[in-house]
Image (tube, rainbow, N blue to C red; front, side, top):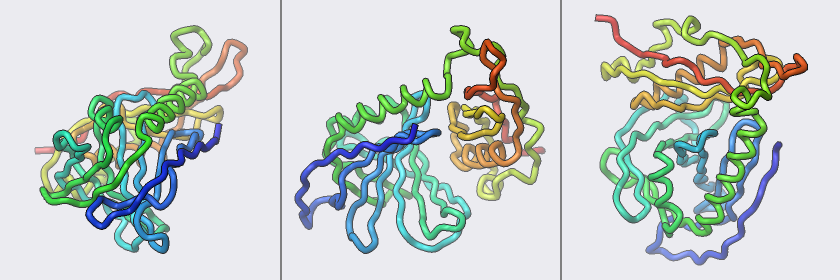
Amino acid sequence: MIMAAVLVVPTVASADQPLQPIKPWVVDYADTQCIAYREYGDVASPVTLAIRPAPLGESYELMILRQRSGTVLAEEIEGGVDFGRRRIKTWMLSYGVKGQKVNIHQFRISAVQMAQARSAKSVSFFANGGPDSSFMLGAMPELLDGLSKCTLDLQRYWNMGAAADGRLAVPSKGEVRPIFSSDDYPAEALSRWQEGSSQFLLLIDEHGKVAGCHVVKESGVPIFDVMGCQVIRERSKFSPALDAKGIPVRSSYITPQVVWRLEP
């Protein structure tokens, strides 16, 4: 299913504008996610803005990627996203990627909030009340339509809804709650006495492996959501779904709620 589409939009840089793009948007039709990204700023050390819709389309992740070395530990910061109308309050999750010299600032907003981007000329991100980064956009109607098409293709690829219409004879089966331990409680959340519960959409391949994990019910504490997916992908084991002929096929699975609670 891996495909990529490029949206070319001419741009003119200006000193009093947000960061200007140096490459066109790329919409990547990957096997486990849909994502659009674009490079900005300096060619020698570009900043990447990425947009990733959830597989069910209910939310979007906006990510800023910078090339730099640093810790892979996650840090939560009160932040916001502004498409030029009104600032959308949300958490910013900052973390590094293990084995790579890249730092990511991640913001999650709802699909309704993301709809503001369709007519937006730029987007600004905030952390701790102050500005973090600002980017020129362009071609947003085409970009969002492309991501919507990709999301529908992703749903078909993973046979979402197939159990209801009879295409799956046996759904995928597995347990996720028993694989968690108290050692998984994120230190950042522990230091803030944070609690919450998350629910995840898992993409299960023909061999029962969790090929993708996405949040469908946010805990309100982003680090719980990230840690939940990390634990599930590393430790969970599933039996694959079967079609009417008994052949293993790709499928999706929505987990029960994973609860993060501090013991009194």
